[in-house]
Image (cartoon, rainbow, N blue to C red):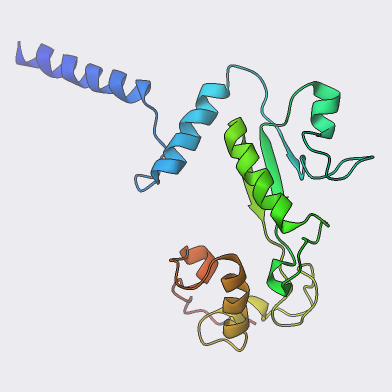
Length: 185
């Protein structure tokens, strides 16, 4: 009888787990769990795809409220909308994609209200060379941004434009992870 009860409880536990799927990361934030479950719930409703700057500009328009090339063609907005923050570090009022940061902020809020997914990219100016984000002329750029590196202070000034230093930052943003014991060129 105990064996049957144990098997029943194990089976019941699997059923409960299947009803409420969770990400594989046990430390996932509540927001990440909500996003994960939202994406799972949408998988049977159609295909999800994304478009960069979808609400900002299109093939023949710029900054028209409610407009999206995807919506014009497909009748609905993309499920995932990306935004670029490059040039924020320079103090510019618009991104390297020529989208004003105020419009990006408003667009992110609108996408959230729509129930869609925002993605954010930040191709910031190369802290070591001063070139674009695509400047790969030095293999020492990342090392220069690490704590104690010659451009650590400048990198932190960049980050302060995005998130003031008084606000806790993610490890991946701060590059405060342990350095490898291997020497890089």
